Amino acid sequence: MNKADFDFLSSLLRNRSGLILSDEKAYLLESRLGPVARKHGLTTVDEIASQLRSRPSSPLELDVVEAMTTNESFFFRDTRPFDQFKEIVLPQLLEARKSSRSLRIWSAACSSGQEPYTLAMILKEQAAKLSGWRVEIVATDLSTAILEKAKEGIYSQFEVQRGLPINLLMKYFKQTGDRWQISQDLRGMIDYRMFNLLESPASLGRFDIVFLRNVLIYFDQPTKTQVLERVAKQMPSDGYLYLGGAETVLGITDRFQVLPGQRGLYGVVDPGRAVAAAS
Image (cartoon, rainbow, N blue to C red; front, side):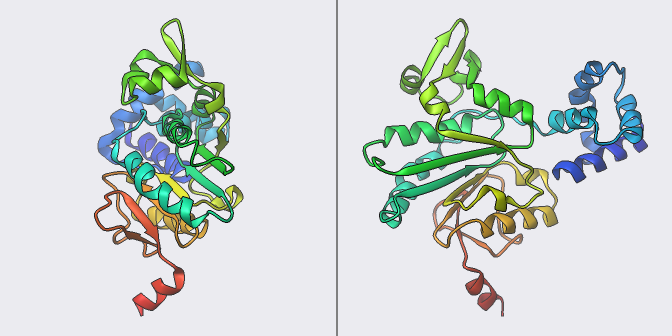
């Protein structure tokens, strides 16, 4: 792939998804876009670039963005965030919301659904405490193809072996051949929607808890700031934000604060307090 085509495709991906590709990541374009080229009757990634220059906003463009932004996910990824969710976040919010008995959770960039289904399983295990509550899980991703996979809730043996406790596999999944499908009950708990994090999430409503894990690492700093500040606007002052282990809000936004001793878990900072602290 020549430099001009790499720069063109990198710019397109940045504008459509926020994904930043450095020069040393050219191999990713080659490996991920090879199948896209074949799907559209093309031979090389350079031909993809040529087509997109003459026909922007085409199905080819959508396939390119989806191929480059679909990331790996697995059940109970990193474990600790879900322990925090069960042992710290849920108890505190159940007490704080006992009058409204309502809770909304956003799994952003949910990929093939393992994160929102993990949350659904935890909530199911807490069913006695949540009796009479309205709990919503909204899961979003930029890729419509990956959202369809998530909605189906069908996973390979390899996928269910990665992080999923055997007792939960047997309790919430049904085996068909060499694949496993999560129960209709749990699938019904998730509201899957296509959403681009470069846009305002106002249309999604307000959320008490936001999982935005392992996403910001793909953005440049101004984009990280914009995304986090938009998310903060959709959260109450006692809301919780989850980021990935390699991500932080420090030096990016003052709308969230690190919670002492809780790596990856952040609290919302009231805009008034943030302005006062900065002055």
